[in-house]
Amino acid sequence: MTRKLDGSKLVIATHNAGKLREISALLAPFGVDCVSAGDLGLPEPDETGTTFVENALLKAHAAATAAGLPALADDSGLSVTALGGRPGVYTADWAERQWFEGEPGKDYKGRDWYMAMGKVEGLLSQQGPGVDRSCWFTSVLAIAWPDGTEAVYEGRVDGTFTWPPRGTMGFGYDPAFVPNGFDKSFSELALEEKQRISHRADAFSKLVADQFAGQTGA
Image (cartoon, rainbow, N blue to C red; front, side, top):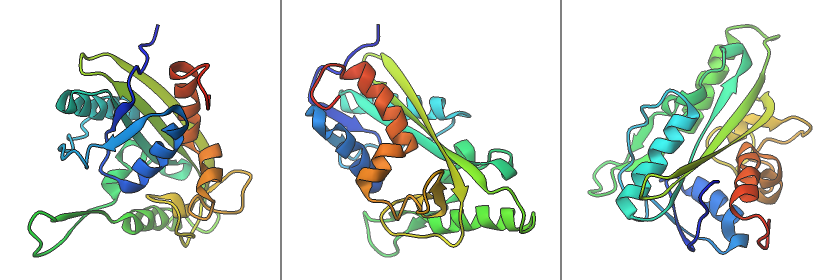
C-alpha cells in the first residue's frame, strides 16, 4: 500500500515559479500548504538520472531530506518524434542558464527557454518542410518522505511542435506545444484548461486517486 500524505505542509522541489504556481493550484482543493525548495533556500541537486523517474525521485528525496518534510518533485520534458525522442530527459539542459550581473546574491535568473525552443526548431527545419512535428510531454511526479519512502506517478500529453512560439501564459516549452485536438499552444490556454489536459494533470490525477481518494476535490 502506498504511503499517504498525512500533513498539510509539502515542499515542492522546484526553483521554477511557474511550476510552483501550477502544482500549488492543483493541490489547493486538498488543503495542502505548498512551499518551494527555492523559498526554503534549498540547493538544486544535480540531475544525474537518465530517466524522468530517476530525476524526479532524486529531487524529491533531496528536498525531503533537507527540509525534514514530505516533498513533491516533477521531472518533465518534451520528446520530439523526428528527433528520436530528444530532448527528452535533457529538456532543461537545452535551455542555457542565465545570470544577473553585478547583483550579489541574485546571480541566477533562470533558463533561456526561447533558446531551447529555437534549438528544436533548428533541428526540425534541417529535415525539410515536410518534417514530422509530432511530439509529447511527459511528467513524472514523485513524492518522498524524510525516511526514504517514495511514490511515483507518470502522465503524458501528445501534440505538435509549432513555430514561432505563441502565447504568454505558460512556461518552458509551452509556447511551442499545441496539444492534439486544440488550435492553441499551452501558453495560449487558460491555466484551468491546461490543468485539465496537460501531462502534469494526467500524472496528478493518478496521484489524487492514490493519495486523496474520498477527499473533497478528488
